[in-house]
Amino acid sequence: VQLQASGGGLVQTGGSLRLSCAASENIDRFNVMGWGRQAPGNERLLIATITNRNYTDYYDDGVKGRFTISRDNAKNTVFLQMNNLKPEDTAVYYCAIVRIGSTSWGRGTQVTVSS
View 1: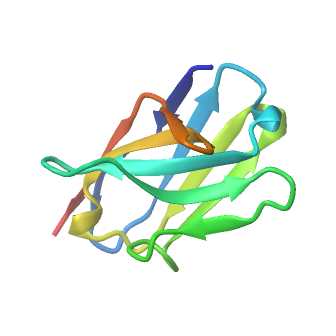
View 2: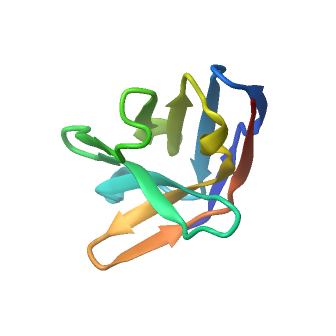
Protein backbone atom coordinates (compact mmCIF):
# COMPACT_ATOMS: atom_id res chain seq x y z
CA VAL A 1 0.00 0.00 0.00
CA GLN A 2 1.25 3.49 -0.87
CA LEU A 3 0.97 6.31 1.66
CA GLN A 4 1.33 9.94 0.60
CA ALA A 5 1.46 12.74 3.15
CA SER A 6 0.53 16.30 2.27
CA GLY A 7 -0.31 19.59 3.93
CA GLY A 8 3.10 20.60 5.15
CA GLY A 9 4.57 24.04 4.77
CA LEU A 10 6.10 27.03 6.50
CA VAL A 11 4.31 28.39 9.56
CA GLN A 12 5.16 30.76 12.37
CA THR A 13 5.50 29.72 15.99
CA GLY A 14 2.07 29.24 17.49
CA GLY A 15 0.46 28.50 14.15
CA SER A 16 -1.42 25.43 12.97
CA LEU A 17 -1.27 22.95 10.13
CA ARG A 18 -3.38 19.96 9.17
CA LEU A 19 -1.57 17.09 7.52
CA SER A 20 -3.34 14.48 5.42
CA CYS A 21 -2.20 11.01 4.45
CA ALA A 22 -3.86 9.38 1.48
CA ALA A 23 -3.57 5.61 1.18
CA SER A 24 -3.77 3.76 -2.11
CA GLU A 25 -5.78 0.95 -0.53
CA ASN A 26 -8.48 0.46 2.06
CA ILE A 27 -7.07 1.32 5.50
CA ASP A 28 -9.93 -0.32 7.33
CA ARG A 29 -7.89 -3.53 7.44
CA PHE A 30 -5.04 -1.83 9.29
CA ASN A 31 -5.66 -1.67 13.01
CA VAL A 32 -3.08 0.97 13.85
CA MET A 33 -2.19 3.96 11.71
CA GLY A 34 0.27 6.60 12.80
CA TRP A 35 2.32 9.68 12.14
CA GLY A 36 6.01 10.07 12.67
CA ARG A 37 8.62 12.72 12.05
CA GLN A 38 12.30 13.04 11.37
CA ALA A 39 14.36 16.15 11.93
CA PRO A 40 17.82 16.52 10.32
CA GLY A 41 20.37 14.42 12.16
CA ASN A 42 17.72 12.63 14.20
CA GLU A 43 16.05 9.26 13.96
CA ARG A 44 12.50 8.91 12.70
CA LEU A 45 10.13 8.88 15.66
CA LEU A 46 6.54 7.72 15.86
CA ILE A 47 4.63 10.56 17.53
CA ALA A 48 0.96 9.64 17.24
CA THR A 49 -1.09 6.52 16.58
CA ILE A 50 -4.76 5.65 16.30
CA THR A 51 -6.50 2.30 16.36
CA ASN A 52 -9.28 1.23 14.06
CA ARG A 53 -11.99 -0.13 16.33
CA ASN A 54 -12.18 2.28 19.25
CA TYR A 55 -10.14 5.07 17.67
CA THR A 56 -7.87 4.95 20.70
CA ASP A 57 -5.05 7.42 20.24
CA TYR A 58 -1.53 7.71 21.63
CA TYR A 59 0.85 10.67 21.58
CA ASP A 60 4.51 11.22 22.27
CA ASP A 61 5.01 13.55 25.22
CA GLY A 62 6.49 16.17 22.92
CA VAL A 63 3.23 16.67 21.04
CA LYS A 64 0.58 15.65 23.58
CA GLY A 65 -2.07 18.33 24.00
CA ARG A 66 -1.11 20.07 20.76
CA PHE A 67 -1.51 17.42 18.06
CA THR A 68 -4.59 15.33 17.24
CA ILE A 69 -4.63 12.27 15.03
CA SER A 70 -7.77 11.07 13.29
CA ARG A 71 -8.73 8.68 10.52
CA ASP A 72 -11.47 8.46 7.91
CA ASN A 73 -11.58 4.88 6.71
CA ALA A 74 -14.21 5.67 4.08
CA LYS A 75 -11.75 8.06 2.45
CA ASN A 76 -8.65 5.97 3.18
CA THR A 77 -7.13 9.00 4.86
CA VAL A 78 -5.37 9.73 8.12
CA PHE A 79 -5.04 13.26 9.49
CA LEU A 80 -2.79 15.06 11.92
CA GLN A 81 -4.02 18.38 13.28
CA MET A 82 -1.08 20.32 14.67
CA ASN A 83 -1.72 23.36 16.85
CA ASN A 84 0.56 25.70 18.78
CA LEU A 85 3.50 24.70 16.63
CA LYS A 86 7.03 25.25 17.91
CA PRO A 87 10.37 25.51 16.09
CA GLU A 88 11.32 22.09 17.47
CA ASP A 89 8.41 20.62 15.51
CA THR A 90 10.33 21.33 12.30
CA ALA A 91 10.79 17.99 10.53
CA VAL A 92 9.64 15.82 7.67
CA TYR A 93 6.38 14.19 8.69
CA TYR A 94 5.42 10.68 7.57
CA CYS A 95 2.34 8.57 8.01
CA ALA A 96 2.65 4.90 8.72
CA ILE A 97 1.01 1.54 9.09
CA VAL A 98 2.01 0.26 12.52
CA ARG A 99 2.23 -3.47 13.08
CA ILE A 100 3.71 -5.53 15.85
CA GLY A 101 7.41 -5.62 15.13
CA SER A 102 7.38 -3.38 12.07
CA THR A 103 6.30 0.00 10.75
CA SER A 104 5.68 0.80 7.09
CA TRP A 105 6.35 4.44 6.25
CA GLY A 106 4.98 6.47 3.39
CA ARG A 107 6.33 9.53 1.61
CA GLY A 108 6.71 12.54 3.85
CA THR A 109 5.86 16.22 3.86
CA GLN A 110 8.08 18.99 5.19
CA VAL A 111 6.92 21.13 8.09
CA THR A 112 8.98 24.17 9.00
CA VAL A 113 8.16 26.34 12.00
CA SER A 114 9.84 29.72 12.11
CA SER A 115 10.64 31.46 15.38
